[in-house]
Amino acid sequence: MTETDIEPVATVDSRGAACPGPLMDLIGKIRDVEPGDLVVLLSDNEQSLTDVREWTEEAGNELVEVDERDDHYAFYVKKA
Amino acid sequence: MTHHVVIVGGGTGGTVLANDLADRLASELASGEVRVTLVNDDPDHVYKPVWLYVPFGQRESVDGRRPLADLVADSVTLRIDRVTDVDTDARRLRTREGAPIEYDSLVLATGSRLAPGEIPGLREGGHDYYSESGAESLREALLSFTGGHLVLSVIGTPHMCPAAPLEFVFMADDWFRKRGLREDVDITYTYPIQRVHGNPHIAEWARPRMDDRDIHVETFFNPESVDPEDRRIATMEGTDIEYDLLVGIPPHRGADIVAEAGLGDSGWVDVDEHTLEAENADGVYAIGDTADTGVPNAGSVAHYQAGVVGQRLASEIRGRPPTATYDGKTLCFIETGMDEASFVEFDYDHPPSPVPPSQKLHWAKLAYNESYWLTARGLL
Ligand SMILES: Cc1cc2nc3c(=O)[nH]c(=O)nc-3n(C[C@H](O)[C@H](O)[C@H](O)COP(=O)(O)OP(=O)(O)OC[C@H]3O[C@@H](n4cnc5c(N)ncnc54)[C@H](O)[C@@H]3O)c2cc1C
Image 1 (cartoon, helix red, strand yellow):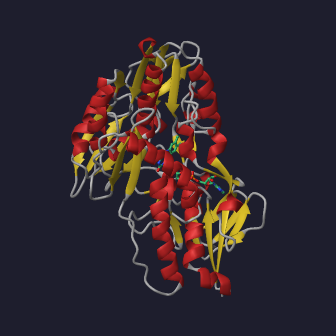
Image 2 (cartoon, protein in one colour; image 1 turned 180 degrees about the vertical axis):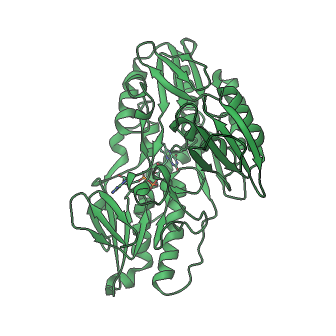
Image 3 (cartoon, rainbow over the protein chains, first blue to last red; image 1 turned 90 degrees about the vertical axis):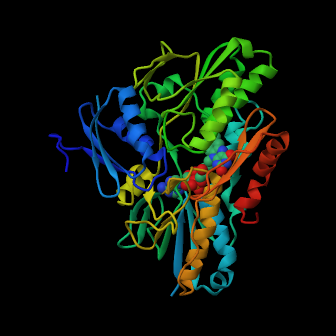
């Protein structure tokens, strides 16, 4: 589990999706949640490691943690 | 015992499937062993690709409408009604007007709908060509637009026909050039992620063409609101831009019944990407835009998926294990101007590689749009 102290309000499971699926899915979910909310993106696409970081920086959201799991990554993103 | 197949949605996927089953199961339908019902909430079948041409005065939106009854085989029961509830345990649908419908096999082909209301100001401040009324009102706006900043903003993803936003700016560039107005019109294309198209291969192909044609690009651009008075788009990333004419690709959603039935989020049914079976219920398939397979929301996809589900249903009904699977096949013509187009074909394992644009491919796209009515009838 994550070290973050807030509970995610939503999990976006993009495992199996080709790029840019995961980032697009994350953007869609971030749209739906409130500022300060935490969203978890599950992706098994290596490209997400750069994509997600680049976008969160650009959009001013916070990439709180990237958790490497057995066969995928979990990205914890907090909406600004 | 009669096996009842019910298809919800008489767009591309649902209509092709109904006719496919009429053909494939002709003897079972004739003997009464099988019944196929197609439920659509509009007496007309609507062919959306026509809308791309409406703003440029090349087609009328009525060209994209035909009565469903003229397209669907007589052996299929056509019901014009709206499904309001899906009970996958009882295998029963409720509808707005008629009696509940019991099914043995259900296929959801409910497509996409636009949700512009999710972006404050978009409805008032923007145009679109993703609806009949939008395409018609955009035509009026374009005809009176002789100079200024035209912005095409891809706001919602997934959206129908991922190529259509690129096509629109390529066509607009050419249309204004041919009318001697291009010098007075700035064109900007915006996209949510770091490149101009979701698929990296198509993005790589399109980007230099956009640069050559002076189509400005803004990436990582996710509109949060539109100010119709100031004609300004504000984004999550903090880059605001001003526009004179905004063409938005609005957020898309699927049918409400999908989420209510626990079949998937936002109207998209969670399916096995090969068998197209719903993951959260037995006896349910989804095809076309509503099937969450990760492939583009395109008519060609709906068409191929209908063929796969037609074969699977026929096998199941005949007591054989279904073996047909969908391999991600997608086919797409991409207009690169008013009289040239490219073409791509790809699947889960083979990435797209757009071919050099030509006038022949443009004519092929127009010819396909005409022959589409044969596809809908299951003949092509
Ligand atoms: C401008 C534009 C250009 C396009 N160009 C292309 C192109 O060049 N090539 C291409 O392949 N694709 C193109 N597309 C995409 C294509 O039109 C769609 O992907 C395709 O129509 C999807 O088919 P479908 O059967 O999933 O859904 P649809 O064709 O949208 O049909 C869904 C049907 O379900 C009905 N329905 C929904 N909910 C209910 C309910 N609860 N009860 C009863 N009925 C219901 C709807 O009324 C509709 O008739 C384009 C789309 C647009 C908007």
